[in-house]
Image 1: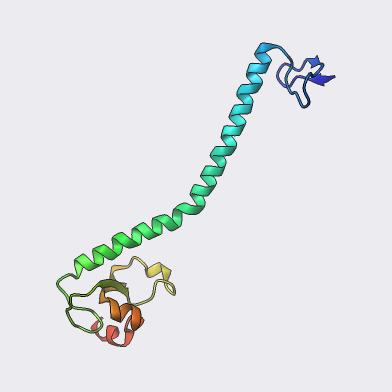
Image 2: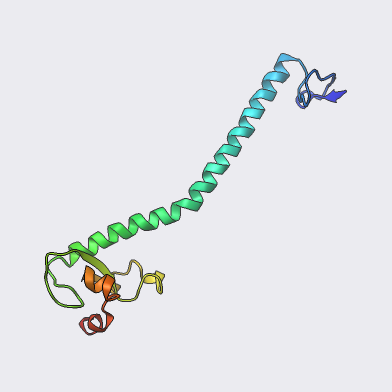
Length: 133
């Protein structure tokens, strides 16, 4: 004999692992409870994955917006490292790198318009960057 999880009456289960008796009210209550438990599990999984993946996504979006702001702010200025104007691509070059100093990632005083060759090929061209600061 098994005990109904809803009304606590004893009953003879017809199916293996049957949790509720054959009373229609108990079966409906058990089905509703089972759906809620499954929905809670799915919600917890989605929430956990959103929590895990949300911070890097927000950082990337914030970095794109910040870099666009720096390029717009310094649009009339030359490259901070080499001092030349050219038609190539400009980056938002950080004096103290984002990897070594993550707390300075969005600091406006640490970031200036820099031509792509100075920023990528010359690793920021720090020797010429320093005197301009």
